[in-house]
Structures are given as structure tokens and as C-alpha cells.
Image 1 (cartoon, helix red, strand yellow):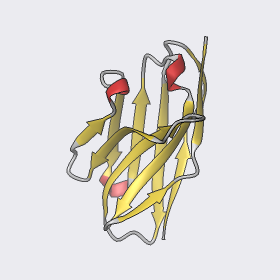
Image 2 (cartoon, helix red, strand yellow; image 1 turned 60 degrees about the vertical axis):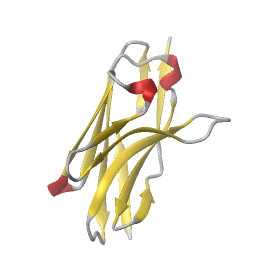
Image 3 (cartoon, one colour; image 1 turned 180 degrees about the vertical axis):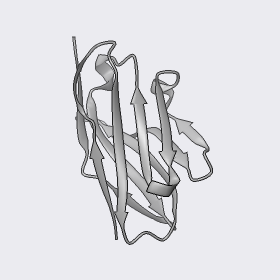
Image 4 (tube, helix red, strand yellow; image 1 turned 90 degrees about the vertical axis):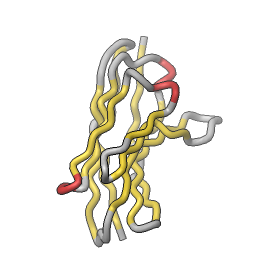
Length: 115
């Protein structure tokens, strides 16, 4: 089993920045990719950003140019730098990791953007 521990959520004003971190631990075979998804009430969980062990990144359309994902393979850690936050970014953010074809999820961290 792989455990994902998220940190860095909180309250920020419109236009501000936050950085989320997620560290994987436990019985890890080989993590192929890690990423972040978010969910708001009444909506499906959506991709925010992901990164493969080879460094390939993918972003949701609504965050392109504002968010940056990075990872540390040696530490099985992923970071999400979020800039120019707006009200629509308010959500619970979930860390995701794929370990040899098996997905794992963190418990989620709340990000609230206020005006």
C-alpha cells in the first residue's frame, strides 16, 4: 500500500499564491506518475496537473500558465505551485499517484480563495 500525505492548503486572497506538497510512502514498487486533482461541490473531480517519472507534465486547461507541477523522484514527492489564484480555484485538492498501474489518493487538502 502507498500512502499519500498532502500539505500546503489554506486560505488565500484572489491573485495570491500557494504551494501544495504531496509525499508518498509505504510499500512503493515504482511510481510512474503523480499529480493533483480537485473537486468542487456538484462537480466531478478534474485534473489539475500531473507529472510522470520522466518529467512529462500535463495541465488542466483552466490552470495552464498559472500553476506549475514539479517532482522529486528520489523522495516520491510532488509539488504544485499555484499563482494568480482566482475564486474558481477554490476546491479540495487531491494528490494522486500511480504505482505500477494502481492508483492511490490522498485525503485531500482544502484551498479557499477569497475576495
